[in-house]
Amino acid sequence: MRDNEQVRGLTCKNCGAPVTTEICPFCGSATGLVTAQADMNYPVLECKEATINFWTVAFPAIFAFSFGFFGFIFPIIWWLQDDSEEFMQVCLISIPFAVIGVAAFIIMLIPLVRHVLVKYKGTHITATVYGYLDDNVLMNGVPAQIVKLLVNTPEGNKFILYQLGDTKQPYGINTQIGLMVYKYYFMIDPKDKLQKYIKWN
Image (tube, rainbow, N blue to C red; front, side, top):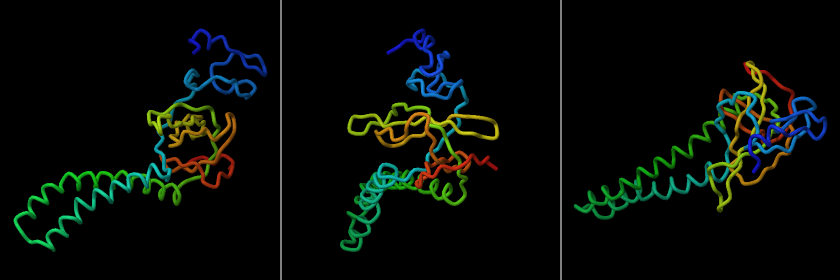
């Protein structure tokens, strides 16, 4: 891995200008510098993903319904079949399952609410792909990816670090992708339509 002095000595392969970011600020070419070593030359905007996929919805839903069954449904079934003193013991045993079920349901609900807000109240914008970072989340031992995106806001250019929830790097460096945004909720446009920049209200 190159140290900071080596990074400072890099030059753009296209125009020869000194570079410290993934995209040359002079000619707009990709420099080959990895995001982990690049300067963050714009402020980072808070980003809350509104992505719906297996890991954000289906996975917590499995826990919500399985633990919810033993936390709520099973005690009711027990009570209907055998109204005895053991019912209170069953209820006490079911409390941890109920707590986990409710927590998993809330985790599942959050991206769904974000998705609905972005879909029906969001604005279409475009973002420039600057690079990728390894997420702290591992999938089969491989780190998921965070894509670094440059977006235009009323206060100027800013970066967002969007958690993809996938180990792949699907977008090329220095390409543009469509985004939908509502406040600090972001979602990569599922239709992937490239839009002109639209300033936020």
